[in-house]
Length: 182
Ligand SMILES: CC(C)(COP(=O)(O)OP(=O)(O)OC[C@H]1O[C@@H](n2cnc3c(N)ncnc32)[C@H](O)[C@@H]1OP(=O)(O)O)[C@@H](O)C(=O)NCCC(=O)NCCS
Image (cartoon, rainbow, N blue to C red; front, side):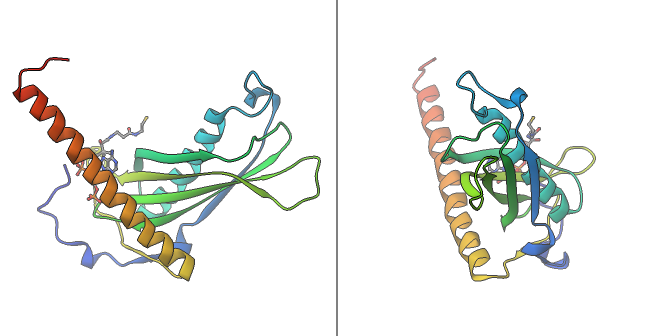
């Protein structure tokens, strides 16, 4: 649990979104493929986690761990030779957690078309201290209208995540109280 004895976040200077925005780029190789010959989804998920982790570390100024990854969407297949750009930014900050939004773009190796969006995801990272305990993070200051929209959308996702976790916890407690053992 976060140390509630710590003072409120107000004494940590806010950080603008642009201060930690990061893009990782990677050329896909034959080692990255699935049985269909296209790039394995897990390879893209690793890149997404790497980019988001870099952003979370930059924003929080220290180590941060992945707490959850949700809404990982694959829109189009990625192929060997494609140059994949994974763009990540902090969408929202809480006390010790940050939602990082990630967009995956692919430049097709055999086409001269602009990079195409092939995926996206939202990850929650918790900043941790040397003992692995959650530590406070600077609040993010959205700069552009797009950043502000992403902040508001992240708040909606946060509300839904908490409500879902609470509802499932209550259901499990209720079933346990009824003596149901599954
Ligand atoms: C994430 C972790 C640090 C949370 O620790 P905890 O003791 O549960 O601490 P808290 O309940 O205070 O949660 C800390 C923050 O993370 C958020 N959080 C925790 N679990 C979450 C989840 N599953 N989804 C979204 N947010 C989550 C909390 O809402 C809280 O946010 P806030 O401080 O901004 O309000 C802890 O569960 C952990 O270390 N997990 C393993 C992480 C890891 O190793 N990742 C790599 C996997 S190989």
